[in-house]
Length: 305
Image (cartoon, rainbow, N blue to C red; front, side):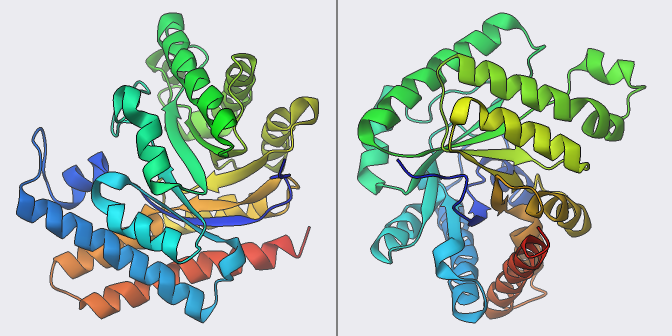
């Protein structure tokens, strides 16, 4: 059994599907045309080229990882496997409030086809949400856990704890207050409930927190009862400055082993390229630079532990 609490992992995440379609390409409530699909696949390749360039420059291959979807990134997944890279692929339907499998009962077949290093899910879970909704999600996640244990595949669990209207109202409608005051406690409670349902990730991919004591509480719960699991901080599409703040907090906490940042790294370079402001080569270079900067920040902050 690998001890993931000690293994560094810095992920460039680009498994975005629904948000990519809607916000980058303005495709809503319909499937992309074959031409649009080809273009989206090419944009995923641009991000991957940025990732590979960063490995040549300043990102150590042994701690680098990528996260990409099968729908628009199957060629990237295959090349990552062939190149011996650390990579994760998602199995959830994109853009849904409730977790469900992207390929229904066939999820295992897709995992086996691409043989990723990690199998990833994104789950929106709030302990104060409707109990039946949470129960349905947990049952599906237990099914996945059981399969992954049998297949000897590590589980990468992305937990988002969205605010409920009643919770926001109590905080005067302030999302900032929710992030600072309530979300860290709800994250701990969510992890506890998920673990109690027999769902056992190797790595928790979690929203950043502002205070070291909040980060410590999250790690304590993730590693409760001797679990050898790691925590990585996700970017949530926040500004570069906000993500840097979160990484500075996390890098100093034992058990937080890295990050998974996506849009903050690739969105602007791709948007500029799409608008004709930059060449493909410039977009690739900018993505490599952004990923490299976050890596450098992480490694420098870790030295201060």
